[in-house]
Length: 60
Image 1 (cartoon, one colour):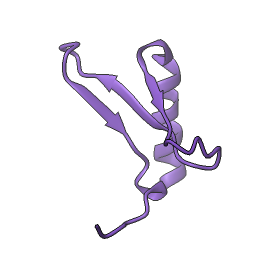
Image 2: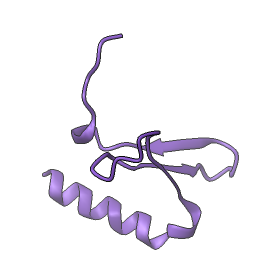
Image 3: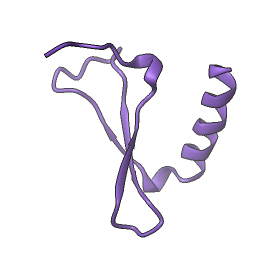
């Protein structure tokens, strides 16, 4: 299920690649997840895409 959903989302991102911004952590770890940022249809409201399978829970 994950692979099917991920494939569909990646196609969406690739289709609008110029509209996305990409962020990584301060460590610039090449194995870390890249956070994707885009804006809603209004062009003002930002949203980020994060793969939940790549997030580790941390109590603070």
